[in-house]
Amino acid sequence: MPSTGILKHPMEPEICASLKKRHSVISGRSDFWSSSDEDEGVQPHEKAIAAGQPNPPYCVRNVEQHAFGRREIQIAEQEMPGIMALRARAKDDKPLKDAKIVGCTHINAQTAVLIETLAALGATVRWAACNIYSTQNEVAAALAHAGFAIFAWRGESEEAFWWCIDQCSTPTTAWQPNMILDDGGDATHLMLKKHATAFKQIKGIVEESVTGVHRLYQLSKAGKLCVPAMNVNDSVTKTKFDNLYSCRESIIDALKRSTDLMFGGKQAVVCGYGEVGKGCCQALKALGCVVYVTEIDPICALQAAMDGFRVVKLNEVIRQVDIVITATGNKGVVTREHMERMKNGCVVCNMGHSNTEIDVHSLRTPDLLWERVRSQVDHIIWGNGKRIVLLAEGRLANLCCSSLPSFVVSVTAATQALALIELYNAPQHRYKADVYLLPKKMDEYVASLHLPTFDAHLTELTDEQAKYLGLNKVGPFKPNYYRY
Image (cartoon, rainbow, N blue to C red; front, top):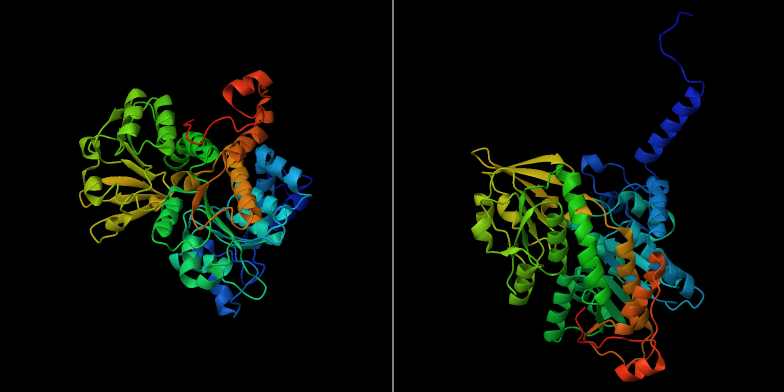
C-alpha cells in the first residue's frame, strides 16, 4: 500500500473513538426535558410542555454534560473551605431536616456547592436561575443528574425564566415549600402574587441582593410581608467580601474576556460608590485607568474623593470616557441620551443586580443596528457608523461574561446557609413578619470558618480585657452599629 505521507499514531482508533464519544456526550440528547439545541434558539421547556409534562423532574439544556459539570463543582469545592467546613460540622445534626427550599439564584459551580450543602443538612430543594445569562449549563446538568430539581439554562427567554421559577414555587401534593432563598426577589414576588395561600406557610425568606432587599422593605412597609425575612445583602460578610473583593477581581476578568481591553490609560466612570463600586474602582485604578465616580450619597462621594477619585456628574464626562460601569441597583442610570453622546467604541456594562440600570430597551429601535460579535457582547451601531460595546445586554457583567472567585462566594454561601438555618429553627415568636439582619455572632462565625485557609491565628482576650471592654470572650466583638 502506498504511503499517504501522514504519520499515524498507534492509538489512533482509540483516540478517534474517544473523541467521537466525547462529541456525542456534548451534543447528544437524553430526553425531552434536556435539549442540546442551544444554537437553534430552542427553549428546553417547550419540549416538556409539548410532550405533556407540566411537572418534569428537572429542565436543563443538556443533561449529558453532567460529567463536565461535576468536575466544575469539584474544583469549586477546593476553593470554598467555609461552606465545606459547615457541611462537615452540621451534616450529622441535619438542622434543615424537612426544609423545602425554593431557590432562585445564579446557577454556577459555587451555587452547586451551596445546594449540595443544603441537601446534606437535610433540606429538599427546587432551584431556578435569577438571571437568564449566568447559568453554567454543564453545572445545571450535573445537579439534575444528581437528582436535584433544577430548572435553568443559559439564554432563557423571558417566558421561560418565569416558567422555571413557577416550577419551583408551585405547591403540589408532593411539594409544599416552606423556605425561600432569593437573589433579586423574583421567587418571592411570583409566589406572593400567584400562590398567596402557600406563601403564608413560608417560615422565612433569605435575600442576598440590593434589589431584592429593597423589594422586601417595600412589601414590609405596605403590610404585605406576612413572613419573616433575612437581609443577607447587608450582613457584614456579604457586603464586605462578596460585594467588594469579588467585584474587585471579577470586573477585570469580565472586561478582559469579553473585549480584550487594555486598561492602561483608559478613562472609566463607575456609577455608584457602594461596596461593588469601590471594588470596581480599586481594580481599574490598579491597572492604570483614570477613574471617575458618580454618586448621589454625600458620604459615599466623600469616600470616593478621599480615595483619589474625581466625583462627577455623568454628563460631565460621558463624551470622553472609554468604559462606563453601573453599580447602583437603581433604574435609568445610563439613558439613551447618554449613549448618543458616548465616543465610538465605548464599553458599557452593569455590575449591579438589576438589569434596569442601563436603558437597553431604548436601544431596540429601527435606527440602530445590533451586531452580536461574541457571546454576551453586542455592538450597537448608529447610522453614522459610531458603535458602542454593550455587555450581557445590561445584565450582570461579571456573572454573564466570566466567573466569580469561589473563595469569596464561599463566604456568601455560608452566610446564606446560616440564615436559612436560623429562620427555619427559630422559635415561633422570635421573628415577626419583618426584615432582619443576620445576627452579628453568625457573621463572625462565617469569618472564622475561612481563617484557617490563611493560617490566621486569632488573639484571645484575657478575662480582664474582656471585662474592661464589656465583652464576652467568644464574641460578638462589635456592636450592631459598628461600621467595618
